[in-house]
Amino acid sequence: MSVEALKFGTFTLKSGRISPYFFNAGLLSTGPILATLSTAYATTISNALSSKAVPTFDVLFGPAYKGIPFASTAALALYTQHNISVGFAYDRKEAKDHGEGGKMVGVPVEGKKVVILDDVMTSGKAVRAAIETVKQHGGEVVGVVQALDREEVGQDGVSSTVQELEGLIGEGRVFSILKMRDLMVWLEKNGMKGELESMKQYWDKYGL
Figure 1 (tube, rainbow, N blue to C red):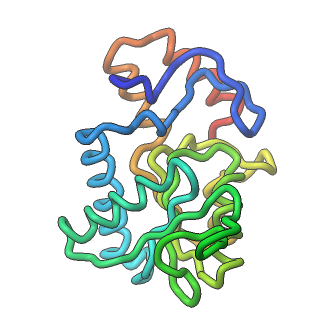
Figure 2: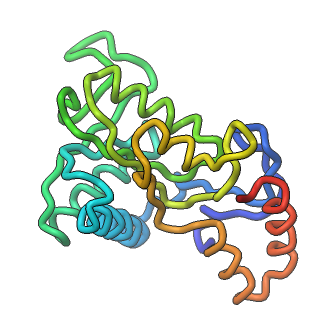
Figure 3: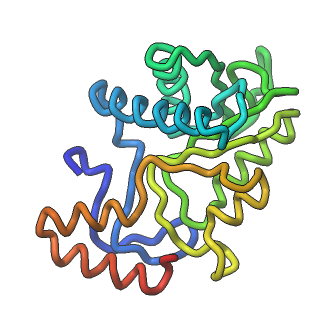
């Protein structure tokens, strides 16, 4: 909230849902904030590896464009803080038609196990596209880690987006640093009653 990466109001999401809050991870762009975020990503991944929830993997994939700094800084934090060595890769929105060409940048994902980093997902469209991109380039997605889990029902209106994605990559392989319920607890602690009430109404409609 200090950099307005989290805002309250009325917002139309990519999924078409009208939300009382919006998370713009593109504003998480200062040294101190990236240090905190990359540490959180790295710790979440390290815990998932320790508990065997995610198998040993080779590459962190950050979907363009917001995922690029997250994947690069998380790969750095994984090595410096946990002595876990992985590569990172990202895609371009449009394929490059000169130089080395193609859509992918960074370490090759072909034949590799890949974990995707995401900022936030509602219906999961962006993550599905990222999973497809990795598959098209010969990689296997073994995990997804998001900064904020909005904890909403997915495209079918019944099961969660997380459950839908786990149907694609394996049960128990989608993780988050924070969940919507954490956000609601924080709002309550800070006396933000109006925002909390709006969140509760939205939760009643789309929450799990």
